[in-house]
Length: 143
Image 1 (cartoon, helix red, strand yellow):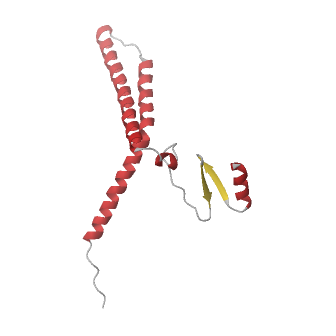
Image 2 (spheres, rainbow, N blue to C red; image 1 turned 180 degrees about the vertical axis):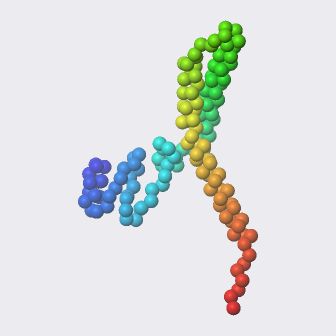
Image 3 (cartoon, rainbow, N blue to C red; image 1 turned 120 degrees about the horizontal axis):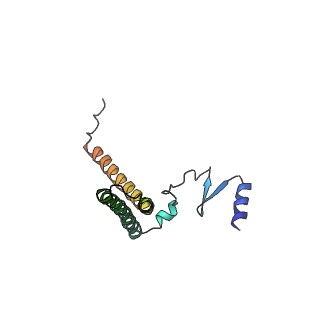
């Protein structure tokens, strides 16, 4: 049904595109498409609650800190092995695990961080524009 509708729209001269389940019209009236964040479309970001975004940031940050802890622990173990035996083992699996935890945490937290940084930037820039507008003197009358 959906494919037939898209084919019918193409025959009428309007080109349609399906992006993450959201149909947008290209050309014509609806020329702009709202941008998403990373792999998430605009509709997914719009329908996510504040608790979901903050929870993702907290959970992602805990994974990042866990990965940093694993790496710090591996470094301290290597230093102790150098002190006791003179040469350390490689501990490659521990370092790979730590880096993987950091990557997973960054992936989980990035949407919320980007969303709130955009929101803060828009609020600050809007505030500074309104402040400049209020502070500007009235233009001198002509003539």
